[in-house]
Image 1 (cartoon, rainbow, N blue to C red):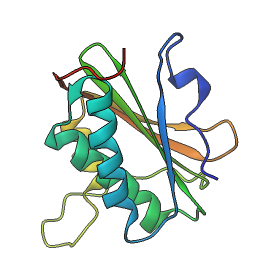
Image 2: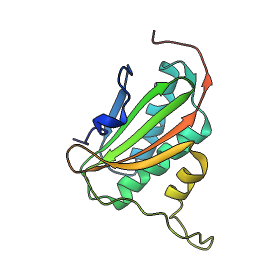
Image 3: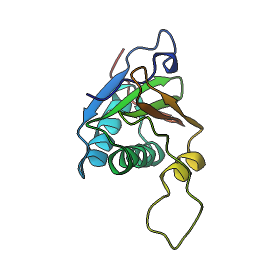
Length: 145
């Protein structure tokens, strides 16, 4: 099972926190994007391209680079911001690769750095890691009170 995001990352009183655990594989980024799209809408906002792209990049990093048996994706909303965390069982932190337009891949953390309002990497409570980011979202139809 994928580790949960660090308990100090989620502000007190935030409810609900939505969570998905997926096995690493080629399907994981697509499953995570679908989860984020639905979860953001359940929280009364509209999922934008940035939150979907950054989720896909963070999950892909876990699938490709981490030695992990599962990947966790968690999401919560505070005001006009959606907070996404992607966790795995590998404690090695991702590194931003030097910009090289001739290289295929290696842009995930750079994209997160460019497009997220804020982001970081934290240790999970059980020795894995959590890549988290925040993205502003537009109001949508509220489904969850």
